[in-house]
Length: 563
Image 1 (tube, rainbow, N blue to C red):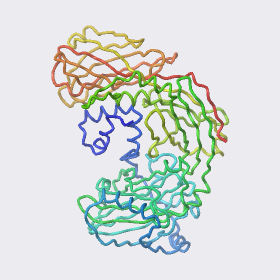
Image 2 (cartoon, one colour):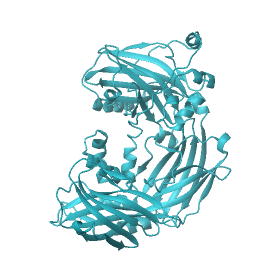
Image 3 (cartoon, helix red, strand yellow):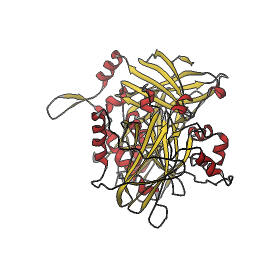
Image 4 (cartoon, one colour):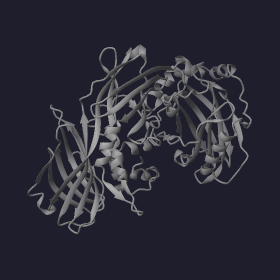
């Protein structure tokens, strides 16, 4: 089931949404798991990196010693695939993103241009010498930092030049769960090109040694360093390895640009990778345990994968046929142009999307890591979780999930235990209340519905871009702003899908920009503002409504040792 708002994600990533539309979409992401999962395909993107990469002193013969240990690079011939269909699919996808220009590629290669055997000849001593992008930035996740220390990041000097622009791959990080390369580009004048000009027309394809794509083509997750010289392009293998697919030992990471800035061309670099050492350092634990919650959600814990840069849990969830039938009976119906009656797709997605939170407990009883689908920093128990590509696929009622964490090695944490913490469900709400904005500052309005208590304290019609501070929140959108405080009923963690009508019956989308907290009894309180970005006048009357209530269920009891 696809959320109706998911089609805005591409425009969001391309900065084509207005500020108000962007904020509304971001708030929608707090409770729409489907949109979050789609967004995670683009995430890890455009976080700025701290490029404080001071070069360490190295012995004068350091480079020669390394070059003596490696074989010269020989560019691979174009592969002749036995599986013509696979190649055809690859080329078809490639043409969708390429320009109609074919140019001769010249690849100039030096230094460590070899089949990179990850973990083979990079020792901690070697890593100390290397000015690693991954080891010298604050924004890369801890798993990438660990990969440097464990020898799974390699310096490279692979170059290709076209149209006077030289593209260079500086480093590669690879293990069976993800592969990332660091690239830079220089113009004809030798000056660095802004990595923002490299982000759009790039493909990152992982192929086997015969040239048949294992994954891709696919735009990676783009991230630039603060000095605006380096671009990280990352390809996650999450879905493949999480579903049990065997990754070949011998891979070729092909990275290709067809346009840099306003210049069209063809820049391609192939990085041969020997994955055998990284695979040997990866442990897979099959679990195959199931549990059904009182809410009718069956959770299957399939396997845990301990890779050098990531710990990955593979799960699946499904709701029972009885629960599915009950949910569908509660979903509003729509009639299409043919007269056929259909379920409201957005409501169906929300009501069927059961979510969860859990902890990974070490041998000392401490929480080593935790996953939480609740997208609220004030309430979430998430710990050491990282974004690593898609985290799930399915239609809400049945999902396959892949959750990534910073490395959790046994020599540090011992044997881990999976402990289910809670389940989240959504239900439809029927709340409407009329407010007179001009009276709120003198007489706040207190409302109650289903045990949820709300207080609206003041209204501001914001006509400029100056920031308005309410509590600890800064409101930048123009439009209507209602200050609100709320105390939710037991078990409620979110009220969503806010709508506002003015005195003329014109309806506006609204979002709650809030700070959440729990009291000693676990009750959630929020403080913030209900923002109505499209409201373009001082209203005489407003009718407020919300359509969804999200609840947390702690009546679960499931622990599984991962061994």
